[in-house]
Length: 198
Image 1 (tube, one colour):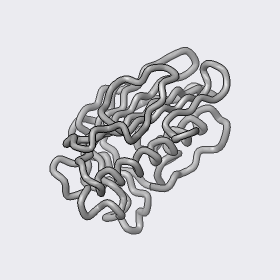
Image 2 (cartoon, one colour):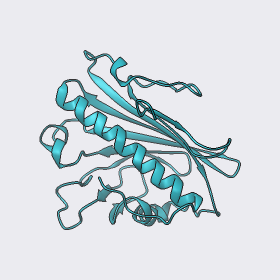
Image 3 (tube, one colour):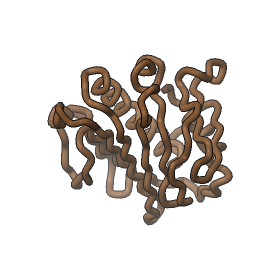
């Protein structure tokens, strides 16, 4: 992947993942970004990712199944209330819910099949500074149906400037890439769903 910021695989309609760290703006097809180009003096950084999903079978998008779907491919345990203001809590280590989780996070916008926004907490290595921030970082995912699948566009904002925050944003960039790859593989049937690490 070169500098690791874009990926294209297979013919048109197959998985494509694009990720940017920097000031958020739409990505152009085929465009690549150097993560060092963001303004180090900016107050906020953003992580941006996009993925095309090719579905192996019809997927039930009932909002009431959101929690179940997340537990199929992302985390072993989730508590999600599919409504604006509802809980959005993901647990990578359920036996230690205060760490490596999004405990206490809430859904900020919910339009089924279109937009999902939620607060986010970072893993334990960034917890001392990131999880006490006010406001927390925020994720906005938009969904657009297309023939045989869907496109997901994700923007993760609220990262402050400074070496610690830049390291956290870079880590999250890799984590979102891994998550979208796992989702794309799960819904395409190319490999069984599995939980990914936080």
